[in-house]
Length: 418
Image (tube, rainbow, N blue to C red; front, side, top):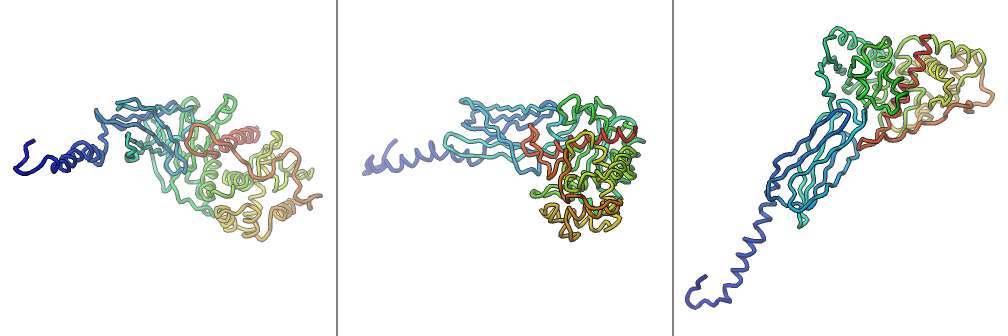
């Protein structure tokens, strides 16, 4: 570099330093400010087996940290996966291995990447959404109001019939029980047990064998139905009631008592099945009814399954006939607001579980219990706590509860049909 007359080299040093900063220091930050160039950002679903996330950055991009985040849309928890990064690496891949039923059919998912360089600069890529669809089949769909029915194959007439069953099942829930449907409900109809199996969250062969004869709620507003089953109409009504009532009472504080949840589902089916009726009548004759307080959870005695369902049908029928559908709607709303069942009953009806038990027994011609409120041996009192199901990046106790419900319901229906 040449200098003008009278200018000393030392006077140029500040300018040389500034030039160095501009060229060798600030230039990389300018590139960073423009964002990291992404060549590929993709996700692929292998149904019931895996979900693969892939990221490729432009050649020469240098990152020291790559983290993947993914979740089910609407859930509060996100799964975080830090990936190992080799020097100069620009291609990254993560495979989320699944078991059948780990993610509900049709679930909306989303993911994003977080990248860091050696200087600690961080960039989060825009979140990408995708659907966890059962792509083994070419699905057709038909909507009526809040119900969306999905089916495959050429049996369109059966699909229309099943949609009609769903509509018929929802009508009394809204008009007779005071439950409001304000969210889309998705019903997937499978043709066979083998088709349905990979979509179910069962974990044992014995459990699967029992569930596959029916249908099961796999998400807050998603129901799987075996369309060829002989009891599909009753199954549709029962499981839809669980979906609708679950949506109507969803809250992070109080669980829905089993007598209310199953009772509404049973009443929505129509007449009490013969097997449940026999057990109920026998228990009335011997004055051995399970108390309402103990009906808050499922019975742990397999021999009481038919009686359990017979009782909750009788109890909800009594409440509807005596106090009307508006009170049931108010009770559900109170539970949705976070009140436990005793508090909710007191607020809506002016009495609690023991008084409800007393009134219901009186309607059946029975007097007070010797010890009011004492649990019946072999029955589980109090709310049911269900564990998280592995595989999802969020708590999903509803799946485990749905499985238990479906398995117990099979025994009830099989006995009722005998």
